Structure formats: structure tokens, C-alpha cells
Amino acid sequence: MRSIFSEKETEAFYDREDAKYRSFWDHEGSLHWGYLPPDRSGPASLVFKQGCERWNMMMLEASGITASSRVLDLGCGNGNTAIWLAQKTGCEVVGVDLSGVRVQNARDKVAALGGDLNISFVKGSVLDLPLEDNSFTHAWSQATFYHVPQRIGAVREAFRVLQDRGVLVFDDLVSPTREVNFNALRFVYERLLFQPEMSHADYLCALRQHGFFVRQHLDLSQHLDGNYDLLSRMAAERYPELSDAYRHMCKAIHERQVGWSFFQAVKIADCLNWVYEGGEETPLHQKYDTWAHRYDSDLATSYRNCPAQAAALLSRLVPHDAAILDAGCGTGMVAEALTGFGHANLTGTDQSAEMLSAAARKRLYQQLKQHDLHDDALPYPADTFDAVTAIGVFTFNHVRPDALDKLVAMLRPGGLLVVSARADYMAQTPEFTRRLKAHSLTQLARRELLIFGQEQICLFVLRKQG
Image 1 (cartoon, rainbow, N blue to C red):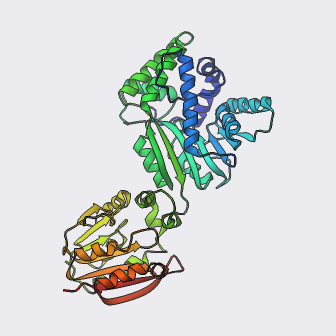
Image 2 (cartoon, helix red, strand yellow):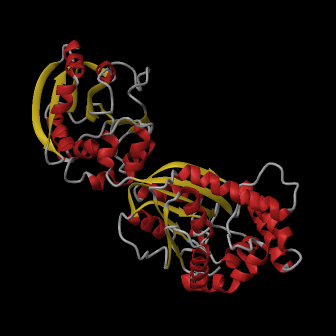
Image 3 (tube, rainbow, N blue to C red):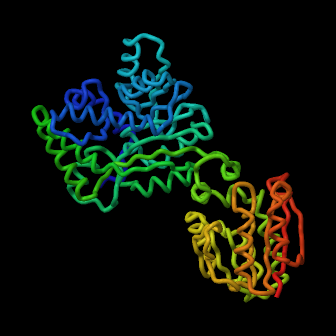
């Protein structure tokens, strides 16, 4: 298989083949796939059209586009979806496509419609959009990204041009396996000029790594199979070779050589403020799943001194072989500091699976366990640990103060609790101080420092009675 297909080849392909596809796929030039209705007994072209219309509506509902939205249509083709979005919602749409033929078709269509639709079209690459940063509320793409060499670049560009909390909705062909067979190589990848580069899971990872929170993702491969069965019948009379290629496409789908996926993702430019926010339905562990990939780099200078100071305080008071639980361990900043002081008997818990994965890669903990401190059960038996740390755990819209009871319970008699809390959090959450006092913990040390440049935080070292 060829190592890469260039955007120039893709542009030439669609400039050359556009008229053919319009002749049987959709004479208006809307070339994407559909979410097919349960009843597929009618004429193939009608069923296919119904599926495309259903899928447009499903993507629109997922996007949240309204009249006040500014939408970027990535791979706009002949402009049909851009026009439909503008007519349906009253939003502004900017369409971008590699194909000069299609961009001109789109412009001609808008001119022929007249009226006051706020639509424009630009010839350009998804990898290098000729558009300003943070200039769109939504980015929309159908059946486009698989043509882009190094599709992660398309994700990166979408993030760049979206505003904070902007929404990206797109569908794309995906590769469940990179070891494609001859049938898939010939009739899918080489025919359509794309690489077996991204699986569904790869897209999830790429979106999160580049700062997107993935709200929804769907495997639509079953519908893709139905689409190409319909297209094979639609092309049979005029283009028998293409019809045969579509039947091979169905075979490749059955063999999981190719699939179809959908993603709805939100740009999170400032994860720190996002995790502190309340009043939304997104669970905290999902927010930290999104942040895990850039947590360390985001907090490298503004926060790391806090876990470092906590580790220094604890290290002076316990031996190197002490059993230490790092509750709410995140990516392992406390463990990194403790390891530097010679401690190795470390256990970590966190409610975010992605944060735990980041911590595991550092190989600092003997054991890691996913656990929500709001759960009724203890993650480990009572009286297990010589010390428990909870750094960055008790703060706004995070862990409730009653979780202190669980942390103290897991301490052995005479064990140490090292906990941090912002000064404003303690002032507004008197229950936190009451819980500490309720356990008659003896304060051994207290230190105050600043995080994020201006937030005062208090570190406490407390001993459990015994």
C-alpha cells in the first residue's frame, strides 16, 4: 500500500469525479452517508435520500446550532449542507473545500437562491485553514476527514478555529484494524485515497489529547453497510464497475476492515476553570478524563509546588517504607515528589480512569485503583495505611467534606493525614473544618502558599489518635 495520499490527489479526484457521483448518488451533489430508516423496502435512491436527511437532522440536533451560531463546514463539497444549515437555523456558515470545482458549484447555488442567506465558501485545506483563531461556535464535517493526510492535524485545526466551548460534530470512515486485507486495500483504501490510520478509539484519544471533551460517539458501521448496498444498486446500470466496488466495500465492512463513526466534542480551552464550575451535567471524572492528557503541562508551574510541599512535610515525619495512600492521586504529582524523597510504598486512587492511566505510565505506585470517595465502601480496609494524602481533593465542586471520614478510617492509629484546602473554600465550607475537628486529629504542621498565582492554599499534617 502507498505510504500516503496527497491532498492534491484528493482535489483532482473530486474535480474529476464530481459529475459522475452527482449522476446517481445525488444530482444536487450532496455526497455523504445516511442513517437509514428501519424500512428499506422502497426504491434504493429514495431510501438512501431518506437516510441522508435523517442523518442531517441527527447531527444538527447533536450540534446545538442556532440562529446565533457561526458554523464552519469542513469539506463542504457542493454546498448543500451549508445551505441547508443556513435555511434551517438562520446561522452563518463558512464552507471550506479542497475542490475548486465544488467550491464554485457551491457559490453558484447560493447566488441562484438569492435571498439573505449568510453563507460564504473558501477553497482551502483542512490542515491549514485560512481562518482566524477562535472564530467559530461550531465546526461541522461529513465524510471528509478520511481524505486528510494525518487526520490528527484536522482535529488540531478544528480546535484552533473554534471558540472556547465551541462544538465539533463530524463523521468519518475509521479503520478497526491497520492490517487491511487485499480486498479492503484495493476497493476501499486505494480507491478512496486514504490510509488505515485512525480507529474509533484513536479518534477518541486524539480529540482528548487536543483539548476536546467528547460528549457523544457512535459506531455507525451497520448503517454504512446499508448505504453501500443501496449505492451499489443505484450505480449498477450506468457504472457496473463502481457498483461492484461498492459490493466489495460491503464485504470489507462485514470483515471489520473499515467502519463509520460519529463524534460530538466540545473545545475546552481552560480546563482549570471548567473543573471548578458547577451547574452542569458533566460528571467530574469525565472532565478529568479530558484534562488528563495535558494536566501536567497545564499545571507545571502554577500548581506543582503544592504537591511538592506536601510531600516534603510528610517525608520528614514517616520512614521511607511507610505505606502511603495518595487519595485523588491524579497523574501522580504527589508520588513524583515522594519518590524523590525515597518513598516507594505508594498506593493511589482516583475517580478518573484517564488520570490513573497517566499516573500508571510513570511507574511510581505499587497499586492504583479507580475509586470515587463519595462511594459508600472504602477502597481499602480500615487501619491500612501509615499516611494518607489528599492534595487538591477538597475544593469547589469536587469532593464533599464527609469524605474525610473515609480517609481517617483507612489510617492506622497514629497515622498521618496530609490534606490541602483553599482558604476561600474553607471559609465558605465550614463543614470541612468541623469534620477535621470531629476526629480529634492532632495538627503537627500547617503551611500556607499560593497556587495559580493568587489563590491561597493551606497544607495540614494531622495525626490520628492512637
